[in-house]
Image (cartoon, rainbow, N blue to C red; front, side, top):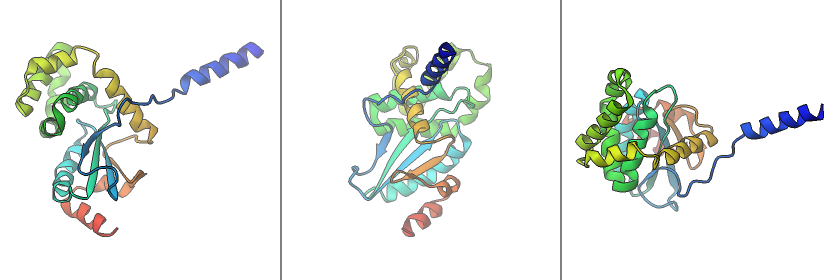
Amino acid sequence: MKVLVLFAITCLALGQQITPVPPTPDGQVYGPGPDTNYTLDVFYDHLCPYSAQAFPNLYHYWINNQYWLRMVLHMVPLPYHYYSFDVTRAGRFLQSNYGQTNFTAFLTWVFNHQSRYLETAQSWDQPTLFSSLASDANVATGIDPALVLNALTTDEFEMSTRLSWKYAMSKSISGTPTYMLNGVIVPAMGGFQTYQDWQTFFNSL
């Protein structure tokens, strides 16, 4: 009996994985430092249609209010978007090595061409997927596709992408788009689609 109890406790402990502490804070930061009054954490998936619909007007609102609104964009590759993890890895490479402008350009390009990875890519094998991602990243940013391809064929950005997913799960993020304002999830924001939605909300604070 004691052996069974010990076995059960061991299985439970292994099942409850602690989220590792990332070497740097998660997300792509837009705007002022953390001492500003409002920080909006945005959780998107490259291949989520609702994220794609929401981003243009949110980004437009942020551009017009970037002097006071800090926005942190977290990419969460959802498991039911089959190629989202690898698309996110490509985005993480661009974010880490080429900064906010190129990361945003790639994100915008993917949002505008989601059907390529949600539909067309279903018949691809992994080498075709990786070469297509490298080529598309080049179209979006002008960065040498060989560099993107190398990042996808090594494990360099795999763990950091997994850590981003674990970070989102630790915040109880189970779908996209999801938003947190000053550390608190605001469910109503999940339905925001227009510039006016964001303006009305922040004007009410």
